[in-house]
Image 1 (cartoon, rainbow over the protein chains, first blue to last red):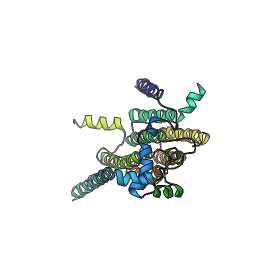
Image 2: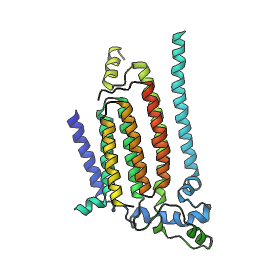
Image 3: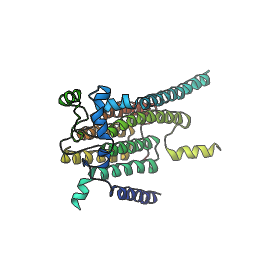
Image 4: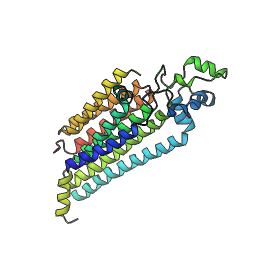
Amino acid sequence: MKVFVLIMLLMTGGLLAYGVKDFPGWSNPNAPASTHVSPRYIQAAYTKTHTPNIVTAVLADYRGYDTLGETVVIFTAGMGVILMLRKKRRNKGKDNV
Amino acid sequence: MFEYIVSKFNYWAYICLMMIGLYAMIVKGNLVKKLIGMNIFQVSIILFYVSVGAKSGGATVPILTAEDIHHAHAHVLANPLQYMNPLPHVLMLTAIVVGIATTGVALAIIIMIYNRYKTLEEDEILVIRKESGV
Amino acid sequence: MILPLDIILIVFTVICAIAAIQIKDLLSAVIILGAFSFFMCLLYAQMGAVDVAFTEACVGAGVGTVFFIAAVNKTKRRAKD
């Protein structure tokens, strides 16, 4: 079992390494990820949102609905945790009675 | 060859961490160990995205300097080479918080499993389930 | 963007990850996972992602470790592998 898993991991890692072969080098300023849309955000963020921090400008202004959805996800997770742990406690109380 | 390896060092590191996490998730029998593996897996992907956003050559954190704010008031555009790419950072902020929410739900499920089976080992749980005829 | 610091931090993170999945005592494993998160946070700060770094420091390393410790406290501390 362990040998099989190790072979599978080596194959997966090899595939990922093969994909990395075509990447631009780490921290290359001319990489496509840094030249396609991000210059526009860096240049326009202050004039459009009046926030010096570009990350928070994109998080709360450009992607405000995305952040709202994230809050819904956290709310659902918290509700799930509360319901799961509370239901267990109530069952225990019934058993004791 | 050596330069090729060093120029993509963060990418090799992310593959290494991802394989460690995957190994823990598949081989380890303890449920908390599986969850630790899942956390390592998540963090490796966050490392990958932040590495994509890095820029060398004098780039700093993506917060506008006072000088550039002054320029923006005069409608002079900032130089993008001066700041790191902010978009992967934004996506990863969301991913970290959602990852912790997933971990919390998983830990609650683990506590429920422990209350029912009194063990956290995967093989013992399977034996108990087989004996009880589920 | 300092390459030697980057390499040192990555070596530490990999060591922490391997230790976290190999130790049999779950409480130790969880604390080492917290150390792993802090090294990761240093790595992000070194790459210029300060917002990600402090989110990871307070949410990933702080709240995550507290959740894990609470769960280990409510269940068993020993693991078989």
